[in-house]
Length: 227
Image 1: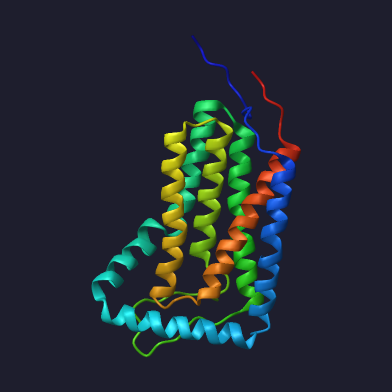
Image 2: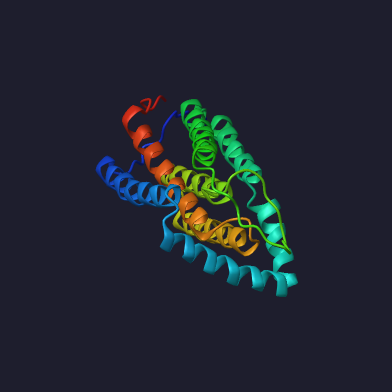
């Protein structure tokens, strides 16, 4: 029997809860952005202490450093994450004919990338500099593009699983993989000496805020289900 085609599924979180989540992420995000932009002394000192320590470890532990470079350059790279989001959008259209949801996913990822690049240009924070670097990166440091992109994509995919009522086993598996990916990519960027710790935290917070606002927008302006 032919299954019905839907543009948006029935499972939806509370709009009030999503609003509270967005507000909760917005406050620390703005605070951290201001502190970084003003080069607040205690935060800069903490960043330097963490960076000095992790860089020594990275130089000494060449095996771990090599593994982290593979993970950050291929597995958790922003391009890989965007391709994953693109695959999800294609799946939504092919399997469910959910065109608007696929467009929402693509627009959210695009806006997240634009926000990330805009803040990098506006803040203009220099990356850590080392006489013996173990990796290199370009453009400004804050926020971490790897951390923000991974957070956005993983958060959106988890939301989509919730919308379509995925089984608990699948949701828990994806949640575990997402947690490892989001935390892992942040740690690799600091370990490899291409980001300050606050860059990574900023990327996480901005990613969470982007997802919360996107979910809120979807809940407010969603297209009614069509069968």
